[in-house]
Structures are given as C-alpha cells and as structure tokens.
Image (cartoon, rainbow, N blue to C red; front, side):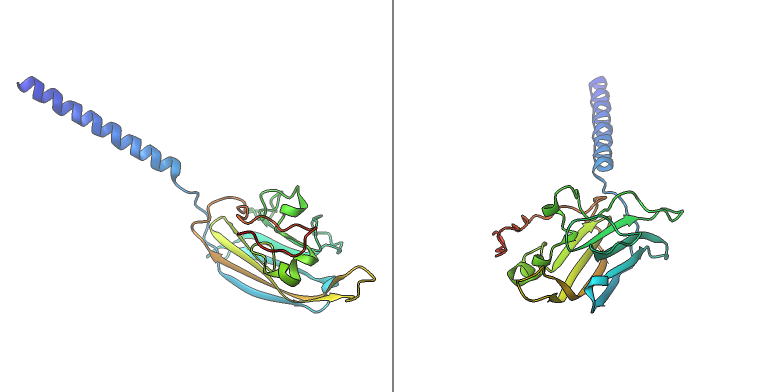
Length: 209
C-alpha cells in the first residue's frame, strides 16, 4: 500500500514537471517581438508648390536615439536620397543602425512589386473625389509595425492644370504625419491592409463591404 502511494506521488510530480515545461515552452514561442518604444510625433507639412514637395523625419526612441527615417516626396524629383517608387507621391521608411547607416528596404509595405498594392505609393486619383474617402488607400493611410502606428494623411489637395487637355499634377497639398506607440503591432514590416485596393480603371472607388 505504501509502495503504491509513493509511486502515485512520484507520477504526479513527473506529470506536473512535464506540464510546466510545456507551458513555459509555448509561452516562449508565442512571446511577441519586443521593439523599442518610440516618441510620439504629430507634424503637418504644407507644400504650396507640390512640384518640390519632400519631407524627411527621424523617428526616435524615448531616450532620443534615432530608430527610423521616414521620407516622402513627389516622385518626379531627382534627389540623391529619393527612392525609385511608383505613384505621383510616395513615402518610405528605413531602419537606422547604431552607426547611422540605413536599412536596405522600406518597411512600409510587405512588397512593392505591384504598383497597385503599394499603400506607400500615392496616385493623384487616390486623393480626389470618392477615392479620397476609400479606407486605407485614400487620403489617410495607417501603417502598423515595430510597436508603433504611423499615419500619413493628405489634405487641401489642389490640382494643376485643372483642364482635361493636359496631364494633371499636384499643385499643392498638406501632408500630416502621426506616430504613436502600438504594442499590438509586432511585425517587422507593415502589415497589409484588410481592404482590397481600388481599381485604377474604376475611379468610383466604392469601398467593398
């Protein structure tokens, strides 16, 4: 009787050890990536001449160290730092290492291979009419990654020329950039939108429900 009781107690202890180690292992696997906390940013850039529109903004951690570099520009510009990207206006963000060197790829989109699935690439028609109200692809675009949410918004968009006889371009626009902490954003690159992109051939831009 005593032998059976001792064996039962030993078996219980073994089972508890197995359960605890399994629980610890599962926690280690599912633990989200830890990204440095960023300083909040809320800035608006007003470009009265959109042909020269460009901005450059560093995103820093709470101690002041530069973590990322965000740049946006009219894609017709030919600056030494300008990315070759589709669209009429485009943004990109790269990480900054301790030596100040930039990372090799933009973190704003999972892939820039397809012009129509690049939310960091803004076409003029995206910001006019009903298209401007299209979620995630219109005048306001949110990017969630690395413990933060970056929001890029466009307002007061004016076109030039306003006739249909020649190519229409941006005359002026305002670009607002907001950066806030978002602990639920754990991916290393911006997650894709859950909203399908609008069709460039159908500029009615009615969001699918």
